[in-house]
Length: 391
Length: 165
Ligand code: FES
Ligand SMILES: [Fe+2]
Image 1 (cartoon, rainbow over the protein chains, first blue to last red):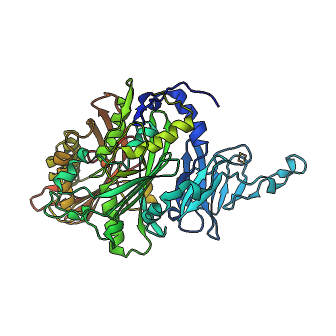
Image 2 (image 1 turned 90 degrees about the horizontal axis):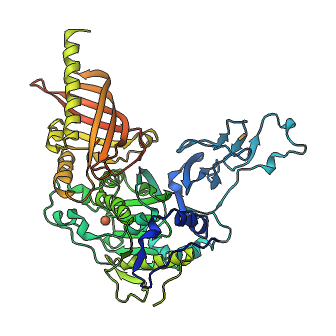
Image 3 (image 1 turned 135 degrees about the vertical axis):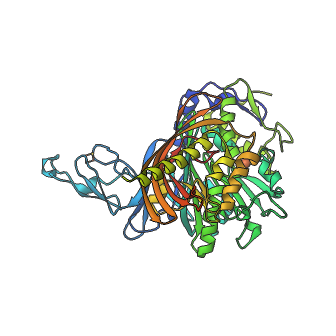
């Protein structure tokens, strides 16, 4: 692979700002990370609950079609016709058991098989439909969360998730039996790493809501899983008690069963952030658009066992609490932009809170520590082949 | 068209413009004042993509008067000083309306909203879509929004939202 000139600082708590802004680094990230040995979540099966349901998604520019066939089996395809490569499906979601390419009318079923093509007597001698199914990337799933990898060499999904599995399972309602409530989709003027570096991780001082709502920060643990530096947060829920400035306190009410699994965040390398907070279950499918832009699809869920009241409560809470316009997250969205602007300056971004020794990496952190991001940065550095400066 | 229709249309347009003017002026109290005092007064901002797929989730889901009042608190008190501010200009146009009963009218209007962040100074389109409104004809003759759904053609926002659309 190409060698990219960037010297990494010797201290583990420093990240060169140039890594966020350089086009040549972005191009190399595409090869080494997005087309490299990582698993990328692209959908949860509950987004396509019924036979014939499908969803399309661009993963680092690669168009994907995720479809459930008549028998209920979900598969991931490249969303491109196996003839000349025309984009096959244009809808973002829908229900179809067959996909027809309009260009020369090749017809595919939801298993990806080519089931019809007009005038094939004019094709190459020996043309056989069975040689032209829709192409597929490698995919696998974990409690309904569907992952794709664009490399043949990637380890198994189980190995990739490692110790993040239990936190992720709890976040997915314990059993992955979710029910889709809808999406909030947004593009941020931010490098994908500025997004993942600052989403999930919470700076309590940023949020005046916490103070105004008498909301005590929860006590919890944060740990790094696998060499990829996935970040898991586990904390018992802190519920607002006493008066709040809100007239409708249902926005911050907890109606779930067990506050001990109240709050979970799993942030998987490279771009995925997911959270369960109060009664919000939120999976954020994020993908880089270019070195200055990341697109994030916030998907919100209820659980299949919820009664009608609980579904409505989750819907009302999900819409207004944690997304790009949410009471306690709109400021985070603004930080993604401002960090990215600030990264166009010389020098390093410096992590402080929770760092005990600049020359060491740790793997256990307190809830609001910045240092939880550092194992991921070390993994990023090694995948990108950046040499650390000598002491 | 009768005289009364003309007067009614002028009053509907005045309400539409009063809302735009309050939003572009960042006057959240003025925004709230365009809504009926009733408990079920609501403002929901949602992508057409969600609506068309039977998904009720919104960008903003203020389905009762107290949530409308809380929206004023978010902007005026809670979020102050934490975001990059931006100007908006709402362009609105009534497309159709219908009398539902003696005190209720439904109206559909188009909107497009330009935004200009104060830091970059570059103007871009924030969102386009339609307002689906239910309007209350109050006893004193005033018109107020009983429910407004801002249904966004823009399913992928170019930015986080601070102010309602
Ligand atoms: S490209 Fe699809 S049928 Fe030819
Ligand atoms: Fe935050």
